Amino acid sequence: MYSGIVAMALVAMFVVVFFYALHRIVSISARPLVSLPAQSGWEPQEHALSRFHVRWYLASIVFLAFDVEMLFMYPWAVIVIEEGISAVVEMFLFLGALLVAVLWAWREGAFRWV
Image 1: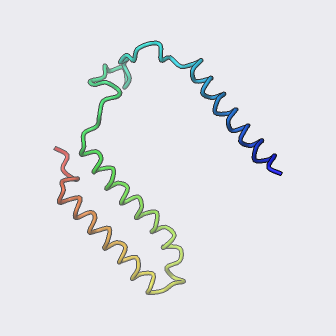
Image 2: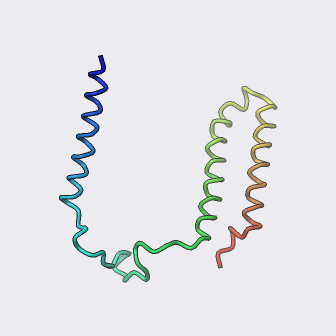
Image 3: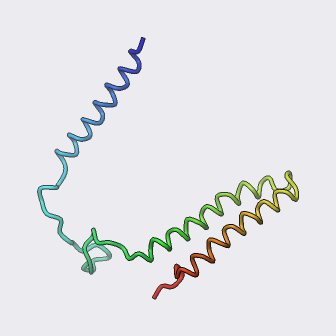
């Protein structure tokens, strides 16, 4: 009765164990991480695992806000003629909420790069 579920669970466990064993075999974790020339042969200025400055997180959130705006505007542009004025009002409400978010980010200094 449950043979399909049991078979799928066994296959999933086999795949997980197989990829874990494959990783252990081919990984280079025995050697220490060293910095090698990366960008056009230039010596790196910092370690590859160093942290980013906190301002980049704000910049990424602003980017996501504009990205989500475009995600909603493309389908809206397709149906705006069918829906009429109500679709236009809804989009301007959405853009107004987005404008509030951008003004908040501007006040917090997300657009200052120095």
